[in-house]
Length: 79
Image (cartoon, rainbow, N blue to C red; front, side, top):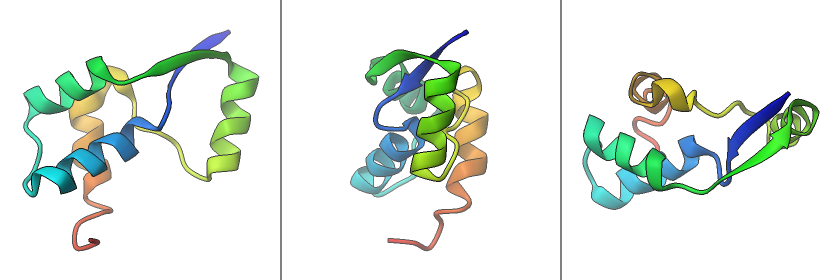
């Protein structure tokens, strides 16, 4: 099985963009960032190794807006 993987992780890209903006990203911004971010194809085995090495799962790009809303709660108050 082949996975499409964002590099860097989509969650990291969105966090950077939101901090750069200084305000929460809109749904349209999240979708636009997802659609314009670099991604590579790798085997599921390679992807799982990448997740283990990085220490966290990326957000689901198919549900980027909803996943970002959940993920960003972990970063509130961290600057």
